[in-house]
Structure formats: structure tokens, C-alpha cells
Image (cartoon, rainbow, N blue to C red; front, side, top):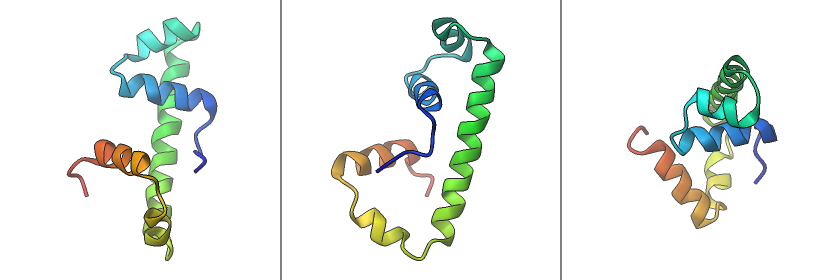
Length: 83
């Protein structure tokens, strides 16, 4: 499965999931906090679009059925009891 996030966005997302702040991420990447916050905005936008796509897709359940257990566990961890 291939992510719609860019490699930079994936790194920011991973760091956020690890509990790092925008300031810490910016300092480590040698970039501005504003640049990191823009990446976070793009991550949120792409996530919203992914959910909209899932809601409209007639094959979402079929694709979900093919996910490996690690991916399923990650999704359960990220979504918790939200759905």
C-alpha cells in the first residue's frame, strides 16, 4: 500500500505520532515552525480527503479485507474508538 503523503509529510506525521512538537521537528529538520505547520495542514487535508474517498468508495471494504495485520493494528491504534 502506498501513502498519499510525501516523504517529508510522512516524517512529520511520524514525529507527531511519537509526541514531538512542531518546534522540535522544525529544529531537527533545520526548517521553520511555519513550514512544519504547513506540512501538518497538508497532512490533515489529505487525511480528510482519504476519509471522503473511503466514504464514497464501493470497494473500501474489499480493499480493507486485503490489509496485512500490521496495517490493521496501526489503523486500530490511530482510530481507536472514533468509528
